[in-house]
Length: 211
Length: 211
Image (tube, rainbow over all chains, first blue to last red; front, side, top):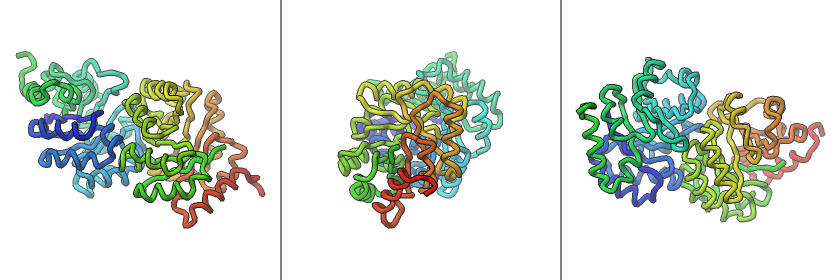
C-alpha cells in the first residue's frame, strides 16, 4: 500500500514548502486539480523540483483531448496523470496509449461513475482505478466498505486507489482491504504539524487495526 | 444566436494575438480547457485584457470543488464558466450559487452524459446546456439533428449551446434549430485568414440555409 499526499487549494509557494517538508515520507505526491487550474502544468514542474525522487501524480482530471493533455502533463514532470472515468472510452484509450509510449502511469478517477460505466471502462488492466467521493458531496462514511463492495462487483479490476476524507482510523483497517494507493489531502496538509501527521498515516498503514 | 470562438491548444501569446484580431467579431471568446491547464486561470485574465469588451467564457470543465474553482475563474476575468454535466448535482448547485452571487453565467457541458443524467440535472433554468461531441470521438455528423432530438427529449431546457466540429454548412441551417450559442474552434483559429473566417461564420448565421 502506498501513501499519496494530495496538495490542493493553496498558493504554489506554500505547496512547494509542504512538499519539501513531507516529501520524503510520501510514496506519491499529488499536485491537486486546483493547483493545476490555478497555475497551469507549470505547477507539476515546481512540485517535481521540490521532491525530485518522489513519484508525482498530476490530478489533471482529463475528460477530453486525452492525447494533448497527457503529453503536456508528462512533459511537465508528472509520473502519473488522471483521466475521468466519465470520459468517453476513446479519451481513456488515448491517455493509456500516451502513457505506454512515455512509460508513465494512468489513474482513472471514478467520480460519479455508474456501475454500467465502470463495467464499460474496466478494460485497462495497467491503469489504477480511483474510488473517489466528491469533495462537494462530503467524505464517504466507510471507505473500507466501499473497497470491499467494489472488489466484489468488479473482480477484474486489481489496481485500486481510494480518495475522499480518509482518516487514520480508516487507514488502520486498510490492511484488510488492501488498496494499492490511499490518498490523503487536507488530513495532512491542514495539520499544524504536517510531518508528524504524515508519519502518523505511515504508522497507521502498518499497524494492526485492533491494536 | 451568438457566436462563441474557442481558442485552444496553442501558446498563450498566439491566443492573445488571435483574440485581438477576431475579438470584435465574436459574441463570446472562449479560453479553451488546454489553455487553462497549460497556463492556469491567468490565461483568463490575459484573454480578457486582449478583448475587454467581449464576454469571456472559461472552459474550466469543473467536475468537483465547484465553489473554489468557480470563484477563482470569475475572479480571473471569466463572465461564463463551464461545469461538467457528469458532476454530482451538489457540484453543479455550488457552481450556480457562486454564479448567482457574482452575477455571472454557468454553462453545463453535457459531454458523455446519458439521458438519465441530463434529466437529473435539467433543473437549472438559468444555466446554458452545451451539447458537446468529444474531440477524441470526432465531430458529430449532424449538429442540427442533434439539437432537434435534444429539444424533443428535454423540452424544459431552453438555453442551448452546441460544440464539436461545427462548420459553415451546419451554421447556415441553425436559423431553424436556433441554439442560443454556437461554438466554433479550429474552424476559425486554424484558418489562414482568421478574420475572414469569423466573418464567414457571422454571415452564415444570418443567411438563409438554401440561398
